[in-house]
Amino acid sequence: MDRPTLRLMIQDKVADGRLPHHYIPRVGGGLGNGETCDGCGETVTKTQVVMEGLSGKDRGVQFHTACFYIWDATRQVLGYKPSGPAD
Image (cartoon, rainbow, N blue to C red; front, side):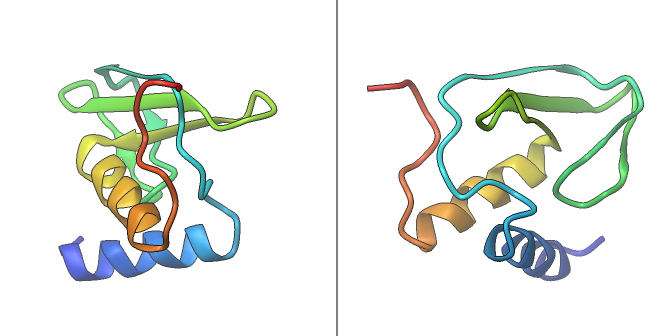
């Protein structure tokens, strides 16, 4: 999927609540194992890195690395705090 299309898809998901708009205080990463990326909806394969975290109320989110960074940048453009260590 090309970046402009991916960016619009993620923007729509943040806007309508399918993706969180708040920062995620703790994010981990590792090799994928067939998870579905919450950003693009495609599978994270065993040769790709998956970024995972809890977005509140124990709702887990999983992203390809590129999708995670697009999601985080999108939130910041919309005026939300960047993901990072909890204050």
